[in-house]
Length: 114
Length: 117
Image (cartoon, rainbow over all chains, first blue to last red; front, side, top):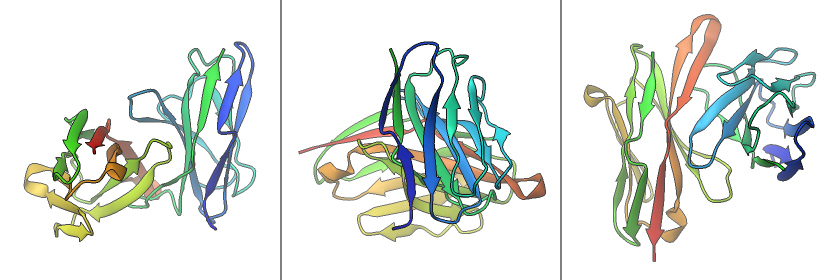
């Protein structure tokens, strides 16, 4: 089955620790995205990647980092510099980084900082 | 500048009622795309529909229908004979083309729909 997988589903982190969220897709999509969702809120774009070995900051990139070494994978690292990292993180992909391309989403990772 | 407004934060209906979720957008472009996504309690967003700015035909898919009106910059979503499984957060989104074949993709704040048995 083609789709997007995210792991882990739930993640707990102590303050001051970096943590990496995994996102893998087997849809052969060029573009991938990371969004953050706070309770009762909409989606905010953290980073996106148009193609392998490329990525760009979104609206709220501070305290986050990404890499795109393989087409299928777009991991997100939440660093200790992120002031309020507790949130629901969603990864998405689209065939191209073009207007009109629908984004397909993974099941999400819920991160809680203790 | 672009913006997507979903003025209804939360809606509650009783099963079998019809319900309409409103979406109003702002854009200066003549070519753009509109989307609706459903986010059930599990959290994953599910794509429902895409509409481009040149196609104002209404669309019906089972109990779902969409009304796109460029004159009022609206792309409303109606669920007929709602069911408990329709309970979710629904997001409207707008995508515009940008230079070098890029895009600007913006989600609205979402409407939480609760369908009561």
